[in-house]
Length: 76
Figure 1 (cartoon, rainbow, N blue to C red):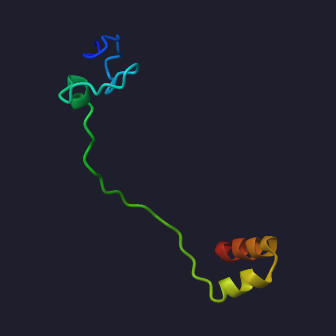
Figure 2: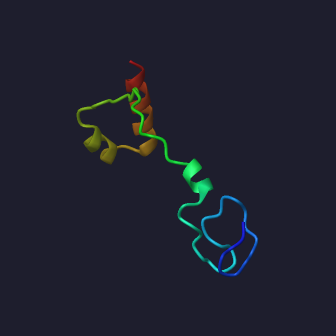
């Protein structure tokens, strides 16, 4: 494929000329072949923990101690 403005040879999937920046044809057959797939819903599992007093505790304690306490409470 060649740029219509500067005639630079371009790769087939180019949307713009690499030399002059000219936008290529919007109806480019390569662009149409690579359409965005429809959205897909998926189920996920997201662990959640609500610890009473966590913010106050994390402000008072050393970060390493908070990490250890949090890790231990999630194991229970």
